[in-house]
Image (cartoon, rainbow, N blue to C red; front, side, top):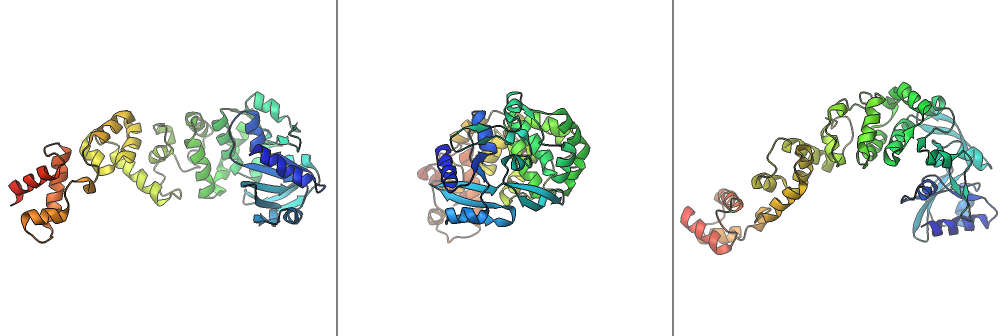
Length: 363
């Protein structure tokens, strides 16, 4: 991916423009972390980029950005710009193109995201990003008092980066996050949940949650239960502890899983009947809340003869044939009985054993 990015920026520069890899990829490369996306910044305007690369995937000319596939890799290419005015504490509504890489870098959120790589693979550090990376500091580019009011999402982004990278928040930034935390009320539920998802799914989530509590953001984020929540490995289990279903936009699958985890919270997860009814996935998640070994839950589940009705080694039509009856509501009672008896190992899940049981008990 990196070599492909260098080919891309070399192609742009071959047309007389400047181009650099910027943002998260140079940061992660320096930290020896994996990175999924590569962003490019350039002094070429969007329409000039579209002339170089006719197969643009999407374009947002208003914000100086295009997305393209180059040698099967997705790249976002953004023209150097200054963001002059923001609306709703989130979006820039007035941008000015610039020929200066430094001016473009200064609009970015944190110093650690300002590293650039040029067409020769040389690292460019205009704002002492490497120093902050070495010292494990999240520092705002510019005045935090101004930058947080421009875009309140930077509050959660700062905490997310601190969490994922296990960095400290620079003291002035930390103080202003605490002061301006109320601005998070202005943001959409989707934006906030996306950042919280990334905090809650981090290996270092305990630290991120500690920051959210310390900076008094729980109430403004409508998750007042967070200080009492049990911290477990899975993101969805953390959400299940927060009573936030009516506060954030969860997918239908997330909602169902959260409800099931709550229902399982006080049930015996090592009971085969519970495992059969709720399934391995949800029971394994609920095990995190009960400090039960997932391995033990998995072993019991694996030992079960059946995991759903379709595993019962007899078909409804065969039951009807044994009883010489046409299909009817009686089948529901018999199948339910068979489930219980097989799970309790009172009947082997073999057709002849099941048929004998039906003959003896239902004829």
